[in-house]
Image 1 (cartoon, rainbow, N blue to C red):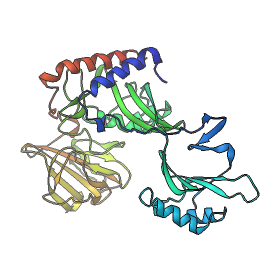
Image 2: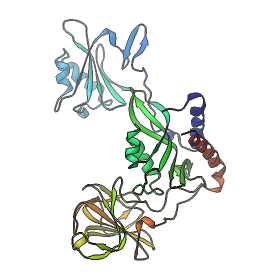
Image 3: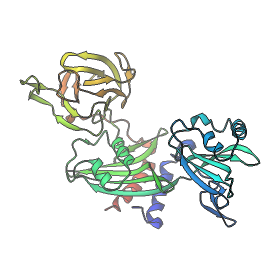
Image 4: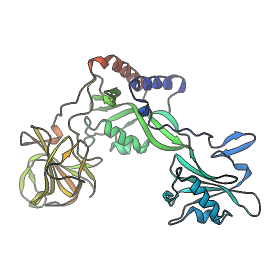
Length: 413
């Protein structure tokens, strides 16, 4: 659903202005594309498509075949190889025809006569970019940018099984799931969501030709779980947009809540667990996340790799020292991430390996362990220290953002 234009859209627009007041122009929008001549524009009693009067031609659509060439299509519609070569030479800096992709759509604009010679070929390179091959008095290739439309939307839903199921069943764009998981990854345990937990979100979605390109920005969101509420308020500080809670504390923590996305916990931290292979009871000082082989495993924080190798029952393992207090390990990997070796520096979110079943394992999963001062602790109970909050000099501006976001979220049922 979209907000009523006269009330909510205006407030959302003000929120954008406030949050972008320090943003550099090149970062002020996710996408900035406008077409010079919008598709289907009416002008002089002609219907224009890609800026071409379509009613003057017969239109023949098609798709680039595997190992196919534009020249094969054009020659079969009356365009000579000399004309094709000249058009390519005249526009060598505009488009490299070697980058034509099989499966992409094209449209021929052919004369309405028995010869049906092609005068234009429009090749759709990606959802926003097209290239017009002209075979008239001039032989050239012209880029054409489709107009991207933006809509501010809102959504709310209650968890039945998972965040993914709640959002997809509600018809929300899949990209919004990833956006929310990124925003709340430091503060919400997505593996511990309970039935009845709920969320609200205000976001901007992009469209081309009524086809969704996904989300561009999240203007505010709120998770409610077991009587507690976490609100995400966007704000730019030190030239970077981050999300803060209502007290101005960053939602970004020193560590991610989990080292991988969209999985499930198959075994928890325990002082005495029956080992599934050895069939003896012994401590399990970690959390097992069941996930398909090849699922990326991320470092939960910045640090230095102290070990990347194979260790008996642990299989392929990566150990990371994050600071003088905290360390983590990632076990049973199928392979290591690029550049992961002892001594390598990693950033929060870097891929250190991929889920596997190496070592003593009954199936693909990640055994994740967390250490404080060398002693194992339950990863699900670690309270990670936050990063910098909103500074004193920015608090007045942040309070404006907070007021707008809370007002908008308050209108969502």
